[in-house]
Amino acid sequence: MNIKDIMSTDVEVVTPDTLIHEIAQKMQQRDCGCVVVVENDRMVGMITDRDIALRCVANAHIPAETTAKDVMTPEILYCRDTDNADEVARNMGKNKVRRMPVLNAEKRLVGIVSLGDLASHSNHQLCGETLGDICRAA
Image (cartoon, rainbow, N blue to C red; front, side, top):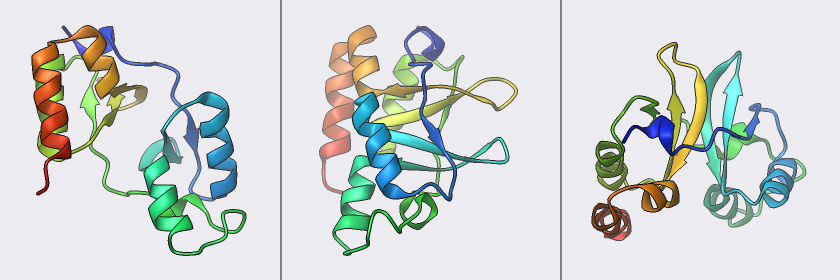
């Protein structure tokens, strides 16, 4: 099964200058755990709810004064919409990530795939192994 068959296509994006409290509100409204940071039509980072907790709140930054670029993860692991779901699951486990942006052949953001998406549509045993790999200490 290809990723395009199971990915979510409704991806929340923000700019590097978006304030963290606005990002948290978007996550709350959309009930999502991450947003993609985009600048000049290109992905430049990702922010998860964990990034907000550990890089903003835990460091006593003020969410109404802190921007996406201050807490985002600039290294973006992604997959292609034509990639095999099992291979993406293995890659997620190897890299200890629960979500990946999905790009098309033109390198445009077309979706996001989560471990939950894979668990709902893919090999359940592999997803369990992937989760174990993600949670296992390095």
